Length: 405
Image (cartoon, rainbow, N blue to C red; front, side, top):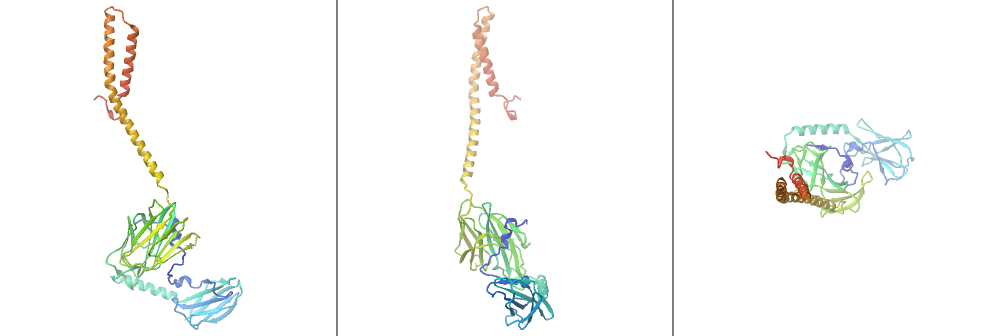
């Protein structure tokens, strides 16, 4: 199956929206990084220490904060959090802790002039990654068991415009909550909405996802966790309004739809509980809608209005003119042929009459009688014209028509 690069739509797949339901962040991605916290007092930094996962707090842990080269110590509370207030604005800071012999060190950061910062130090990341890898290998080796999958809460449907063409992206997390591979009884098949064209699997999608025509197929068995499925396609529309309907063969845990806001374009759905306007990381405005879970077999209906669309009337007029020109040309060609066929008998009859008159004049002249030379010359001239018209109207045509064998 062809895979396409994301190109203009690449930013859409990583859109920086705060969705209605936010998944727990990956501890490895936030470990040691300072996160702005406007709710904290100016010059305040909190350092939270956890073991492997957010919420697995390490209480009573000593945390050292190095501020412009000088060290400060604090102890974590029941929430695993140590607080350092009254730090000088602009100071260069680094947080450190040692948990069961493992040294944890944050990135170096600066104290902001407004608000505070939160830092998380995560112990046991290497052990957790190794254990997860072992579990994944064991699960892959184990036989698949009958089970189910769902469309996870971080899935979203995205719409954007490109040269007035409406493009739609499905960014789906096919989620298996079991600890082993599951067989759902066949592939996961999703028939795309009516009018979908040019569908293709996007880079970063699972190799088990393929598209044929307007049908998306994800083959199993499904490994524990997330199988990422990302596809894109174009939705044909010739008017400012369009209804998009998508039926989901498995439950969708959270409905999230984002559409690029162009002009007064809008979207509505009976399944939407909220619709708002946000901006992507690029600054592009989007309409963001969310709704509750959709059951297996449920259909999501989205009504799009005020879409940018080319007026089809000029195209229809052009096609009508082309058809008229073709018809007129055919009529003229047929008329010319018909006219030629009607003219030939008349020319032949006239030629016969003139030849007879000319022959009579020639007979009289041979008999010694006086002949009207002016009349004789006119007969010859008219005969030349008739022969010329016959030759022009019935000259051989392409393909050998009217050519003697």
